[in-house]
Image 1 (cartoon, rainbow, N blue to C red):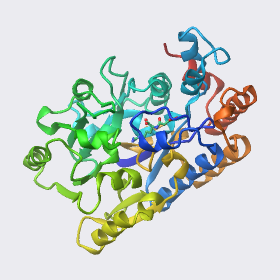
Image 2: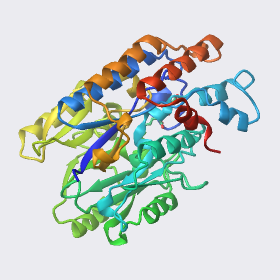
Image 3: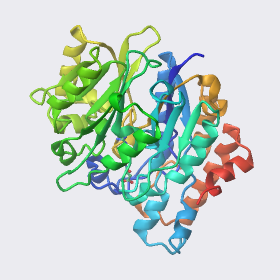
Length: 425
Ligand code: SUG
């Protein structure tokens, strides 16, 4: 069985827009009211997937959710035409694109039952994200139907869970038993802490993790208050390497000591605040990079263009590469449309360590499959959405037709596509 890391990227949906729905997410707040470009956004995401394929990585895809979410509006005893404007925007959000928030994933090597476990994130802190989970659960049950996987329903309210964005795994190799690190928030100044420890603990129990190899680490209040609404804005791990900002964690010394005790081979690449401030880290999304192991064994950091545009961040990265550290290569990608809503390269992907033969092949992509998907995007995704368009019935029709056009290209039957919408409460 060939176990590899598969990055499942969320295809950016046709309703991508800037409604400023995420309090505590600086980029989304800054760009509230701007005009979005859904077609360009989705093509940027597809270009990132192509770049990862070119590096020799295995690439999967998660589908956008049907929007507006009529089912959610119905549960709120309204419909799209009658709903007040903020609720229209919440129902229309394309936020499922940020696949790092879809679920928490524990590879089989970490679980007592030898299965790969996925728990769908409830995302209950933000109204526009709180209705993602039924669509995500339906989709993950389709993709990971093989008995090699266990797909769990979300943690119940009120314990907020935002999935893999607050979870890191370190291991000598992808298929070796690892240390799982759950990062939770207690306080974020005037911003919400979205990940509750009770949720993280519940996920760890459900995934049948060894408590001796599981850490629960508090995110620093300063990081959340500066705009790190998820841990993956200030830290990322891959293999035996943790790449983190000096101010990412509430008790850095305690965390590092606990990590080294459990994993003597762990390597920590820490960026000091004196070189890159929290503000620079958050505006550049330096840490929202994909830290990946290339087929040859070297590690690369897949960064957003915003990281190259910040001279302090880029200078630090150049110095790092010139040194002898474990991260040997930098790759820069353009995901500006997603970045403007606070979603960098790492937000757009969910990592799953698995044998590709156990995955529904319709959700794995190569260049030819991406060509087909890009053609649907070119033909059907709206070119632009201005704030004043949100109530426009013609736009809603276009968004719904775009979603419908995608389904046959992915290879979903009508029943499967309907199941993604209707099979759940
Ligand atoms: O939850 N933005 C997302 C960005 C998620 C980024 N994910 C990770 N860091 N893993 C969020 O804040 C903005 C949508 C809007 O305002 O319309 C938004 O939801």
